[in-house]
Length: 401
Image 1 (cartoon, rainbow, N blue to C red):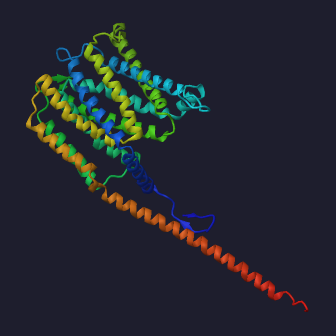
Image 2: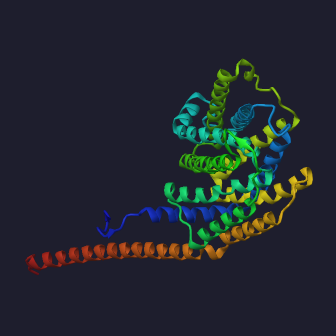
Image 3: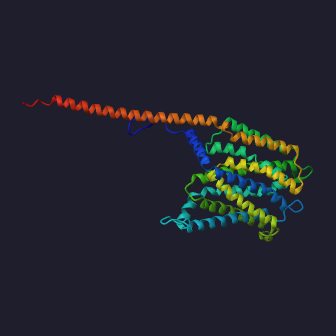
């Protein structure tokens, strides 16, 4: 219990549920205020994420890659670092009088110290970006996109554990529907009779799928936590360090590959084509857009927008590469769309709103109780002082007339 220093009334301190409920209220306020920004983020993310597996598929030659996937990831991180520097230079030129430059040594040093945690998602993203290429060896682009949507459930669990986020029962049911839709689409999607790393293709594919789902989920949650925990830091400062760490990790991977395959693997442009250059630009734009999602929007919204891209990926891969849109895909997409509508429906937030209303009522009652106690104390003090004055007047001897 906390005792008020003015009225000495006792009130309960805010707990974990109160903090998470306040986060939900803040998120609702921001989403209503910046609805246009969220629409633009979702639209851009659908296009970029939808094209990503298609560009990876176009980059394959005879079922494999003639280039090093790590080199693509390194060049992607390098492009994002250059973009962050350009934006910092632009902001430095347009800073107001008296404002500290974002490119000053003190600003960069302070931002670097405050955002050390970004090294964790940078490492996890480096691993995930390599897995994206490996997954293309086992699944077609539409199936890869569907499998990546398994991250939504893992992310929801991590958000509840790490950031104390709250979800209603209807929203958990919507996530379960999402898994069902993904499973329907995944049926009979594995090639038969091939081996990888000495194990059956199905075993290897599911092993990569497990890593492909858990690693980026951890990266997304840690990324959102790191970006929002230092909300006052410029997003371009944070992007500079996030992508800088990513470039370092990928460069170390290139050096490690050179130790096993020889110095020829140090040529990061070897085997690249126009498709891979488009892939690098697409991945860079997608990463930059994701940082705005994690800082100003929501991780769940980001993953559901990627789910919308599944439809685009499936249709585009059918048109460009002749992949068949099976009945499993159509049924899976239908279930996924129902899941999305259910998760973001106002009905799924009724319980939260009631609880929030109850919290506001409790808070208002506490405030009213504190005010009443303060008023009573003031009144009692005033009455006591008046009584004391009357008592003193009665003691004072009467003066003769």
